Length: 428
Image (cartoon, rainbow, N blue to C red):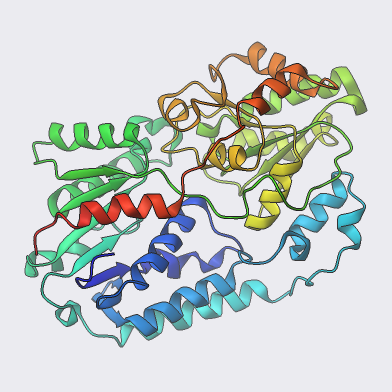
């Protein structure tokens, strides 16, 4: 990486300790934090606060990152993850239930909260942005606080700083019907903040890059350079490793439970399958936390007796636990109406798991060589796919599996090589 000074924004990582496991955006933030703080030149952490930005040295920044990772169940093996063990036992595996494990501490949530508060308070005593050397690269890799433009006014006072922002998607603007009330307006503020300050923008897909460039240009502001870097995946996602001995065909859908992920289509499909096939119905596992505007989905999960034995919901699963689940399952189903990247598609492919995904541009971009594509509204098509993949010796599953032979998933090394090349072009 460049040897010029770099300040990485740690704000989101500090706030995420209230969760036992990281989301996809959290993993991006973590990967960037580790990469940025490992460089050869001067390195700093930066936290935006109501009192202004606070700058900490490399050592303190690294300790903050370590504290966050220690609060998550991210680096434990699948067999040591209590969430994975309970899930494996429910899905029909006996071996996982007898493997050695780390007991879940009842105070884990309080411990994470304590670490979060102590870390946040410690940054308030740190120096302001005047501590950053001339020409520092400022990296902000989440959308957090971008809808509070005053938090970034300090950049007007430091025109020598070169801000670089990572943008994950424009979904609240392009598909406001799937977000919280007024989220579209907040996201427009985020994009304006970026457009006014960015020396460069990094995006996770060409689809997002085109949307960002178009949105900024339509707003009458100059479009900065944009670099596309497909997200890398963790080593836990590979064909070899622990597996669950499943008692029936099992399909996965991964991601926060929210309307744009199109869980309703799958839940209605599974209700029909369960009523028709009874105990012979395949199983659906929903991996992810419950999100926003999801009342109809939650009602089905909590109150529909027909799917109680065939639909399993799990959150807080470790990365290694998810990798083992993907190696074991029948297929990943990804019927989303819109995505910025679709990380589970790539993780599944790296694990050797066949993928059926909605026919949207970004899924074609990241999964074109191996996935099967269906319109997200094609209920009969999704039902046929599930039925064909569930058959003993399924020919369709064999065909999709054959498409994964030789697949080389994107890596963080490759991602950061592209980013480094882009940062090298920024003037000092």
